[in-house]
Length: 483
Image (tube, rainbow, N blue to C red):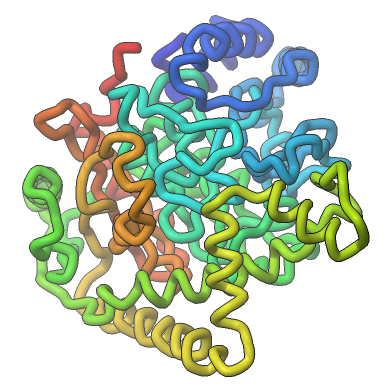
């Protein structure tokens, strides 16, 4: 069962070829064997996992269980789940065991999915390489000295290495799509507000969105069916009719108009990545899609806008971690102010401190209008760019990242270079649009390359259909690293 998709797991469980308990035990065994090489899983709770699996088997025996009953899943370390440590890969929350469960996790529990554990991530989701984790760097399963991407690098590595058929990630500026691309899996960021953020530890509240990561678009569609839904506990949650994302997966894409943004194919794009996207274009044209050139003129300014807004919101959201109520508290301090300063200085890592300082600066008196307000104005221009583009095309196709995964440690002394790697993903979050990454080939070093599909609001079904059609005629998503 090691190289089994979510859909194949569903069929095996329904047909009683394997029990939920046996499936969970098999994946737990794989994690114990392979995780020391990858450092992708930071928390296991075997007792809870096996208890959930046994409950799933009881539901399956009754014959009317939901499709996902008994299918194992791993959660990024920022999703709260009652009785589980939810540390956000930070020393600050290393001892925090959640007293409640995130809505999206609860939704997946309600359809019988079995929790395998917690996936490593960049601390508080701040990073693009998964090197800022308190628990250490996540290795790419395709090349262990390469980055897995961030911040959902652990989730991507787990699925790529087949240590779980599915994982839940979060995407603030590309944190599902970028590691999915680097690790050769499929991942989708839904329209902002489609998936509840309640119980998902916040980085930047106006940008964060949870999404599924799996081997195929079909898997992601099935997972998304159970994840999406209005939540009264989340003020940003959208109330709209439920949709079956698996229903339209086999629609032909003949006549579809696909836009290629000229700004995404500039000098900064690696030639092998460009060639992989050209191959996807050829696949789409072979199925009858029309290709048009479009422009997203404010793309180059998206990084500046994103990091001002995200850092400002991070500064506000992380102010709650003060050593008083929960989380890390320094063992020695002189007074309350000293406790605050030492607890935060010792509890947060370097990247988190950097973003808190940037955020506090741009929100401070005298700089708010010059930086934060300007960034929000630019955010509107970026969103308008997409709306103009969608007048000419149905979806947008481009690269996820400028290159394939690079070596660990190669950008740690140059955070700006790391930030620039998000040039193709951050505009989507600023606009609140849905987007996904799907495997599109490999470079000459054998590292995966992803293609990005971007849609207008609430067009997740369309994106998943296109990705599924591509995956019917390619086998990139079936490739598996040799660990």
